[in-house]
Image 1 (tube, rainbow over the protein chains, first blue to last red):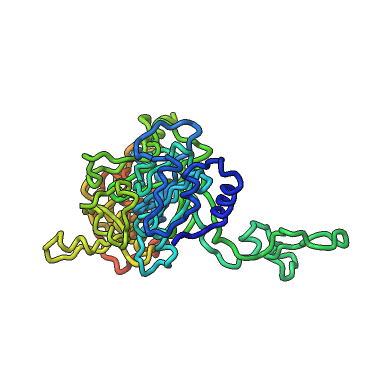
Image 2: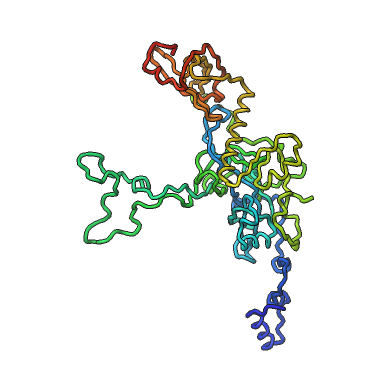
Length: 311
Length: 175
C-alpha cells in the first residue's frame, strides 16, 4: 500500500495535461513512497560516496570537532621545569552518528556522538534515530559544520589523535552555575563605599538611569540575576599532551564547566594551526598499529631552555 | 568478529539491538571506555582480585576517578625515577634544589619541616629555616623535577601535624 502524496497527485495531473513530456524515473519513485523497514538507499539520487581516506587540507577547509568530558585540573611540570596548569579532557568513544549533506539536509555537517548509554535510559525517538543510522547508542550528540572535503563516512570513530600536541583549540562548554548573584560579582560593578556613612548600599548597583527623560530604565540594564550556566567558548587553548591509549587530552588552562560535563573541542579560529601537521579529515589508524601500546605524545617545547635564554 | 570501524557495515543492514555493539570493543588494560568494562574483564583475569571498575553511573564520578588514576601514575613515575624518602613534620631536612630562574644554580636548603600537605603529585612541604638571621618559610613541592636530592638529618619528636607554633618560638628547635 503506497502513500499518495500531494506531489504524486500533481505529477499525475501534469502527465494527463501534457502526456508527451517525459519526466525522469527517479522523480516517480520519489513520489511513490512505499513503506519499508529498510533505510532508504539513495545512491541513485545523490551519488555521494564518502570514503574514509586521508585527504589534503586546504586553508579554507574546516575539520570536525570532538566531544569530550571534562575530568579535572592539575598542574604538571614540563620538561624545562616550569609549571603548566592542566585540564584533562576525556574524548570518550566519539563516533560519527549522522552525515548531513547539501542534497538531503541542505548543510554540510557531521553529527558526532560521545559516551555510551543504555537503551532503557534513552527516549524512543532517540533510540529510533540511532537505529535508523545504524550507530551505537550515545550519551551526547552535537553537530559540527564542516566543509565538503572534510566529510567522514557514517560510523567513523574519531580518536584523540585528531588533534596534535602543540596546536591551539577552542573549547566550548556550559559554565558552572553560580545561582542568583549580585551585581558586583555578576557584572563587576564597584559597589558603594564601605564607610563614610554609606547606608545600606555597600554592594548595590547605585543609580539605574536618568530622571523624567527618558523616565524609564533601559532594557538590558545590568542588574542582579542568575549567573552562569551558559554556553561559553574559551579560545586558543594550547594542547599539551595526548594519550591515544585512553583517549585523554591534556590542555593548558581553564575550560568552562564542571567535572563530568561535556565540552566541545574544535580547531582554533584565531591561532590557526599549521595545516600540514593536522590529520585531515581525521586520524585513521593503520591496521598494524596497536592503540594501547602507544606512548603519550607531548607537545614540542623547543630545544632552548627558556630560563637560560633570559641572560 | 566485529571490526572496530562501523563504516564497513552495508547500508541495508538492520540493527535490531543497538546494544549489541558493546562487546565488540577491543579493550586493553589501559583503555578507558564507558561501555561494559566489567563484562569483558571477568573472562580476562582468572586471578582472585576483580578488575577495578573505571566507569561509574555518574559521569562526574568517572571523571574524578580518572583524575585519581592519573595522579597515582604521575606519583609512581616520579618515585621510580628518584628516591624520595618519607618526610613528616618534625624532620630536619637538607635539600638540593635546582632553581631554574636563578640560571639553574643548585642550592642547598636546610630546615625543619613544619607542615606537609598531601595532594598526590602536588604534595607540598613547608620548610622553616634561618636565612641571614631571618626566619624564612618556604613551600616546596615534593615531586618537582627541580628537587634533586633530599636528605634527612634528624628527626624530632613532635605531637602535632602542623608545627605553626614554632613561629613564635625563635630558638627552640633548629629552624
